Length: 348
Ligand SMILES: C[S@@+](CC[C@H](N)C(=O)[O-])C[C@H]1O[C@@H](n2cnc3c(N)ncnc32)[C@H](O)[C@@H]1O
Image 1 (spheres, protein in one colour):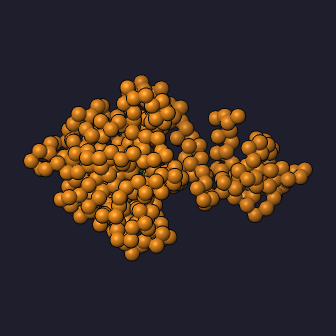
Image 2 (image 1 turned 90 degrees about the horizontal axis):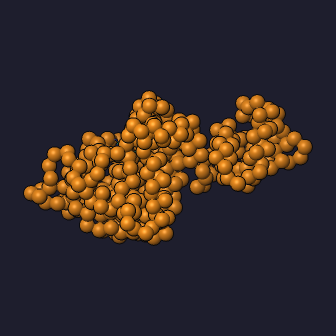
Image 3 (image 1 turned 180 degrees about the vertical axis):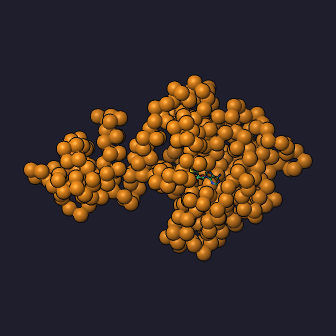
C-alpha cells in the first residue's frame, strides 16, 4: 500500500535527515533523536512506519540501521529522489495542490497566494526550496537525457544555447557526445553558479559556459540551435511567444529552435496513457503557475506567433508523449508582429 501518508512519512524522514544520520552505522532511538533534533517518542513512531518500506531496519531492541530504500534517500545518492521528495513534500507545494479547487474557480495559480508571489520569484528568497525544485527537475530528467542525446542529430550543431538550461546537465551530456559543439546555458543568477561544476565534471568546460540572463528580456546571440527543454510548459502563451521571439532574434540566419516537451494528445487521439500523463501534469502546472501542457497544434500556434514555423516533430522513443519540436525562422516579410498569441487558446 502506498498511501499519501506514506509519502509524507518519507518526506519527514528526508526532512529530518534520517538517512544521512544513519549512514555512519546503527544508532539507538535516543541517539537518532538527538542527531536529528526530533522528539524521541514521535521519532520512534515514524521509524516504525518507514521500516515497513525498508527505509530503516530495526537492528536489535532499540537500534536502527539504514535500510536498502533508505540508501536511495541519502543526499547525493545517484539518481536518488531526496530532492524530489523535499520539493513535493514541502508544505507550500502540497498546499498549492490542495488548493486546486481555488485555482479552478479563480483561474489563478494557488501558489501565488500561498507563497505570496509567483513560483520563480518566491524561489529567489527561499533558496532551499529552489534547490529542492532544481534537484527534483534533475532527478526527473535523468531518464530523458540519454534518449535526447541519441534522439537528435547534434553533429551539425556548432553553438547550442540551452535557454533555461538549469545546472547545465543537458548541455554537458550533449557536448560530451559531440566534441565539436560549443554551448551556452542561460538561466537565473541563483541557478547558473552550478553550471561550471557540472560542465567540468563532464570534461566539457573548455567548450561550455553559463550566462546569467532573463529569457523574457533576451538571450545570447549567435547560436545556431536554441534549446528549450522543459521550459515553455511553465509559462502562459504571451510569455512563451516572447521567449520564442527572443530566440528567433538571437539565432543565426539558418538557426533552429528545439522545444523538448511532452505533448498533450488531441481530444480525439486514442491515447489514454498519454492523456493521463499530460493531463495530470497539466493540473499540477495550473496550481503552481501560469503554465500548461500543450498539444502539437498549440505549440505550432506559439511558433507562428513568434515568427517561427514548426518544421519537424521528432518522437523520443520509450517516453510516452515526449517529442522534439524543431522550428525554423519564417522570413521577416511574413512574420507576424506585436505580442499576439496567434491561434493558441487561453493564456493559462
Ligand atoms: C523546469 S526547469 C528546466 C531546466 C532544464 N531546461 C531541464 O530540462 O532540466 C526551468 C528552468 O527555467 C529557468 N528560468 C525560469 N525563469 C527564467 C528566466 N526568466 N530567465 C532564464 N531562466 C529562467 C529556471 O531557473 C529553471 O532552470
